Length: 191
Image (cartoon, rainbow, N blue to C red; front, side, top):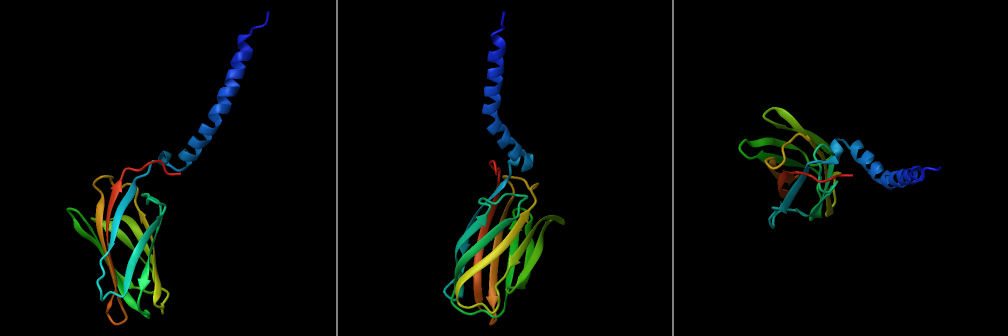
């Protein structure tokens, strides 16, 4: 006699494995991301704090990835307008965190590239690279590009910062002013 359960069992296994194959492939991709791709993200709000005498105004900010993920370099692009040509200048970035206060105060040339580390109580928690203007820069569209990498060990919920960015031009006039409030959140799956 023929066992009819065996072909049914084989057919069920083939159907089940072909059904599960796409899910298994997704799990392999997610596992390759590290820690099953459950990353902490950064939520932020920004505001142009320039006044009528400020020559540049930021009108938009985008990030890649969106939202930014801790442990991954985030490309931040600020766009706006510039009402004068710029031959030189200086930017300043101050980063403050609750309870501790100011943890970064960095100044450098607004022209060309520069970078700095972010340290909290002497521990390096990130790095910022600023891609400055190509001076001389003409009046018109303003593009500010920043690459930021923050350590993925920073705690969600209590990790937050206030970032004040200002710049002056070759005549020490106000060039740009922007304030950012950032907070580390528990993240979702990131692919």
